[in-house]
Structure formats: structure tokens, C-alpha cells
Amino acid sequence: MAMLGCSRSNRASLAKLHILNDVVRSDSHDRLKLALAGDKNQLPWSFRVEPAFARAIDFVVGEQLATWTKTTGRAALQLTKNGIESANAVLNLEDALVVERAVVAELAKTITETRVGNLLGEGRSA
Image (cartoon, rainbow, N blue to C red):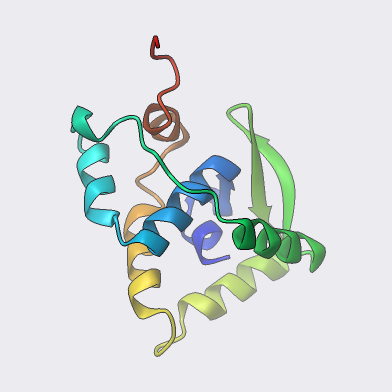
């Protein structure tokens, strides 16, 4: 929810969420910053899809904190009103997930869907 709450319009593609999740889990946020700054040596971005993260998404949707939508042709999640309130509560916690929240807050708005495509190598010839 924090990833969605820090994203533009409280919405993000599933691909973007997986990238952010991988960055937080693997502590590779410095590498992602280089890629976002245009360092072609960091592209395409290889990330691990975490099965537990998919379950967390299912819970968020099941609790009606987010709904499925599309953004730039990709499956995406959009926070509901209750989801926005819950995300704000998580983001305002002082003593939980301090490093993770800082990374997400710094990177979520800078990773546009166009940049997601670039990170994934879309539009490149093999």
C-alpha cells in the first residue's frame, strides 16, 4: 500500500510494484537510481518476482483497499478511499519499516510507466 500511496495518483502498474518490491527487498536502490539517471549499463533491469508479494496484493484487493485497473496498457492497482487512508497510516508510522518507507517515498514518483518500460527493456531489439 505504501508503494501505491507514494505513486502518482495512488496508482501503479504491477510491473512497477514488482520493481519497487525487488529494490526494497534486495537493497539495490542505488543501482536503480543509476538506471533512472540514464546509466545504460544497468539496463535491462532484472528483478525477482516474489510470490509472497502477489499474495499481499491479493489481500489488498480482497480488503477493498485497491482495485484493478490499467495504466499505459499494463495491469495496475489503484488505491480506493479506504486504501489511501490506510496507506497514509502506514506511511506515517514512525518506528516501522523506516528504511523501506524512505526508499519507496524517494523512488515511487520518479519511476514513471515509461521508465518501467525502459527498465524492462521494452522496445529493444534482442
